Length: 138
Image 1 (cartoon, one colour):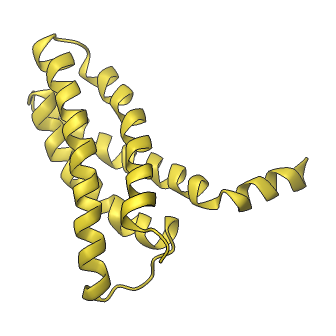
Image 2 (cartoon, one colour):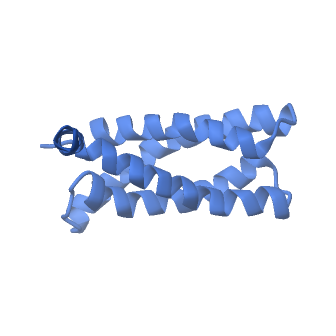
């Protein structure tokens, strides 16, 4: 059983590490989002935009080396990766912000719960975007 689990993890290491860093990115996102929403009483969509910026920066500096094994930090490599990374994150960020705007700001749903719901969708969309568009193997 232990050998099978280790073989599975090794075969799917990028997915496993992405999930670990995806959870950490979600924690960073929440550490910014929740105070903005609950203490500063900013709208959910505004709180999300603020937390998105910090989470994207954290995700890039962790996903690049640890998840996608991209260790070249020269500007010739980093700038194209960063621009594609941010572009894919903008897509998921807009989807997330729109869902929060409608479900929380307009329909007065629970911003804490809806944020969690959107994070599941965002992690999936971001993994696919990063894997296929940003850090793909040459």
